[in-house]
Image (tube, rainbow, N blue to C red; front, side):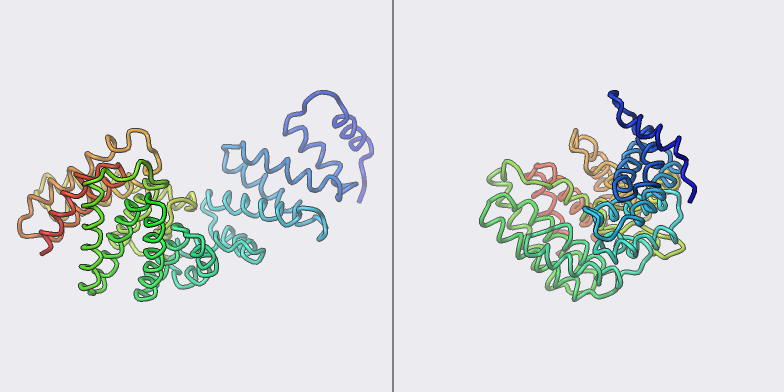
Length: 387
């Protein structure tokens, strides 16, 4: 290797200067010095490249920066301090930039390296996006088991969703029962988890109804109605952390059956997760909105109400994906969508299932908004419609 000593001298002088350097200047200096002193400047080069990556808004630049950080981290000595942490950060940035450009095969290969380094969550997400639910659920299990001891809604729902996607409905229900038990315990001990419990019970009822277990579904609905009646009478807790995000996760998950099947050639969102979707998948899912809205216009004009109700729900699911974690004016922004869903379903007197679904959707949205009396009225009506 030929060393450009003049370049090395300039880089050292630059770093020794008293002025504050731009990240681009640091990257340039560390590139030169990492060639002659990799133990000292290799880690600094990784950090500087990732700093530029996080500031970039250009997908092609992102790939170049993260790929260089990936190579620099891989070149660090095995015993270097914080090597594993830098290596995983570089891998994570690299895979994200590849998926953003739709380079899924390359991105998945990097995710497999992440999994080999002990970070399997991202690979599980990619597998779920490609319809490989059984493999995703296997990766989920260890993390979810650890999370179950800590009461992690996110990990348990994700695991259950992937089991359900793989057709392992009883196993999925068993996982969800564990989550319900933990939520009941928290509600009893802390007094703030009852709104969360309602949403989980309603989703569990949907899970069991989907496989013909009407008895379990009815029991879950009765319990949810009882809890919701109590919330309506007392006004509920002053706060329930993460309620809106949990509502969004379960509502979006409930819409999976209405969407095209996921495959490696045509990936779909990893339903059961609120965040962490690949950028190309998220953009593709939200990119369906214009076509769905145009379809809704045509169905409305043709008075094809059953199909219109279903398309409007798919539109609402995408609204939850796009804005479900925005708390500002939450009720005002979402109420028109759910009000319209109920109004349309009421025009189908011979279709109680669609009306019950629309009322349940609005009820759970109102729970997330803290409007428990109206939520109880909707859910009570949904229960009566089903009976």
